[in-house]
Image (cartoon, rainbow, N blue to C red):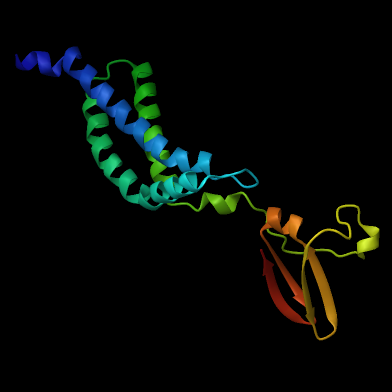
Length: 170
């Protein structure tokens, strides 16, 4: 009976459990990415769900890796051909990448801050008109205006106004 558990029949259950854990980790981290996207409508439920999953993701992915690694170790003992490593590596990546990703602030990757903005009079640009909302700053007689539409994409602007370093955001 012991031989049956360590043979192919016992390994099938280990494959299924490892795949379930790895896929679960991937889905846990992917849901907030899908739900929270800039410039798309979001529901209160979706934002709340994304926040909860995102907040718990570091702990959940750590526990998942602690469960996944021994399963992968057990499966590795049964590898007899070089090509059998591919599914193990895939499962390890499917569990390891979400564990890394859960510790990143990927929402900030969506924005491209302007570190050296250039300016032109509003009458000379084609991307803004008189109806656009702006964030305006005036310091020591030096005035600038950042179109909110562009701030929504760039998220923040690092600049110097009137000799004073400023960061404008919206």
